[in-house]
Image (cartoon, rainbow, N blue to C red):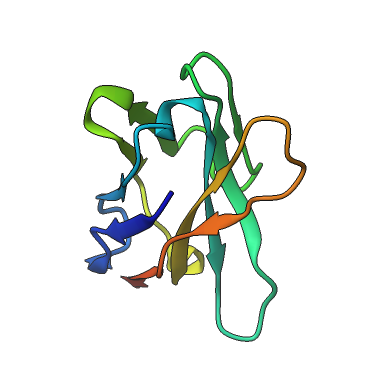
Length: 118
């Protein structure tokens, strides 16, 4: 599967953005999908993940209550709705997919930059 992330940009603190991750391939619906981010000088971290059906989600503590991960398997697209953005959310955001039965996220999008100004 190939992934294409989009939707990043510059936003003021308190604002909102929605990231999209368009996937190719008919098997997308069977993959777990996640969003990671990497800020300058920091390690990449998991932001949120959603299982194949959308019935199970996990979030990093730092984004709980502000971010929402979702997916539309009919459109082969995943989303990350980000509300109440903070300057510390500034990072390159990557979408990733994990095939059923695999332990690692083996498929990655190219990243989209989110910049939150104070």
